[in-house]
Image (cartoon, rainbow, N blue to C red; front, top):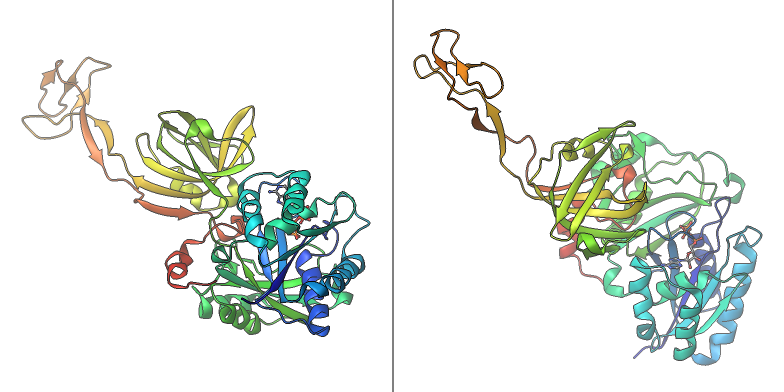
Length: 431
Ligand code: ATP
């Protein structure tokens, strides 16, 4: 078996500067220059999107190189010098961590990866696990980055089923407005989809491959194969030079952050899949946010489709009591109640929409008129009066269908699987 060293890296950036993908790319370049052979694409591993310590998308990175134990010190020195050179160490909350796990150690850390997708871990428990396994780690400042670094190094290769080609800007452009031709993004999206995804939000008319932060990233194209990611990037026209680009293998779009739960089990700051029946009619609150309450045998939970989720709200507002749904999203505390912020909604079974209506006249067949509450009906045409009649129930057509619905592209989380790639991912096995 080939001996490899997996280097995990996290928490090198701040809101104002840098991006850990850039630092990882610089480290990869340095290791390759020193003769180390990468054994896979660099990994871009997304972790719990509800993590309070995250800067943006809660990403951690891992590199896999062929190496011998005697080379560890040299690799560690290279990694430390790259972090010192590029990390925004002066910023509060930038607390880098580095992990160096050999091939026979990564499985022992695997549980940390799965837990870091859905839970919040303590720095000490990660360090203790590394100590137990003999995994070498280095922390800077408060060292919180060791959590993400360990999780990325231990990621399950089978869960890394998509790719992202990221282009970086020349340093003189960092912090300035990004130059990308919008029409070329639309063209690229139309030519490469569904193999690339989330490039453009047609609802909001917004380019989604460029970030809005002062970081070194120019653009990133997400795809289900490395070739499509690269092709998408090459098809896009930029109005500024690309310094270099890197294709990352990622766990994005895998729906890995959702925990299946009953309503009584949900806790704040975790993402869930909850099955329930619609309990009450949806309401729209100021700001255009749509709320609806569901229930299961253990309790009730409010689902929220916020304004940024776009047309998705038009589906949620058409739900009626009795509809059976699967709700996907992050649970938050709102006014001391728990609310699930919807990311996706599967309508499993639509209830019959029964509407109370006036009965028809026996003689002329026309709709009768009410004579007042519980006072029966009369026919205006024939003059027939029927105090004994009660309203009839008529089944009306539902304006929505059973199926899965998702929020608009700009409201999507990195880990959420877009509906367009669901069937494709099943046919592309990686790892
Ligand atoms: P970017 O996406 O720009 O790289 P980020 O959003 O990934 O930034 P970081 O700067 O990496 O944010 O900060 C996230 C911090 O939270 C890191 O220190 C990481 O180790 C830690 N972290 C990530 N997931 C968890 C978790 N599940 N539990 C505890 N800490 C976590």
